[in-house]
Length: 298
Image 1: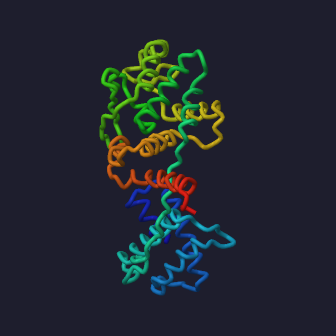
Image 2 (image 1 turned 90 degrees about the vertical axis):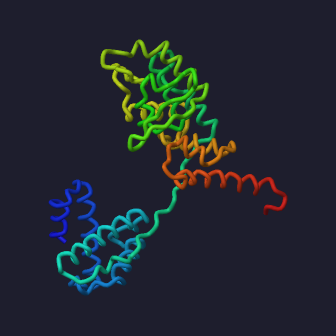
């Protein structure tokens, strides 16, 4: 195993954190093999590796049970180790080659009810300051376009067409998309551009739309702080992140009858399957309404 880790370090150039994970996973695998009295790689079978996977999921006194995602990562490390052993001539076959890692459970995105979103928007920024106008504009744009946090802070002034109410967003992989912008977001941006951005701007501002207190482009971390502080002021005790607004944007559109493929385009998802997880949230809503409203539901 040490030779394999050296191979990953020198020839594959894996990052330190990734190497640390591989080392931890393989150490646990070695412990399991020792418990099974397996002291030679040629004695490892597919059943041995499958048993290790079951062991990971069940946990033990020394190790808590792993989630499907963590167990899958460990299986990948074990599979790579045995593949390396085959390539190095230590064994003839890879016993882990056909062991399927567990599928990660699909986590339903957390969306806020509209009343919570509106409360957060109203609580944006300290009242009466230029930053309050910026914060309100930022949060209105996030919820009003479904933009990722990196897309929102990456906006330049010229990327927002305030006449036609559209914005140019630069997404993952440099992909660009044009999305509509609602009137609430446009009004908030207009107020910010007229009454706040000139006071924040400096020689280093360039064309950035959202500026920090020093006149530079607002960072992702600072934008995140803007949102969390607004949520605290609004008394929202749920975990709220920029992605929460994106989830809420998508869910509220689908609840309002929007086609899933339209939502896919608005979110910038390459595949509609990524967007379809939001339909699970709305189906849950439909089930709840059906269960409480239909006379023969129960």
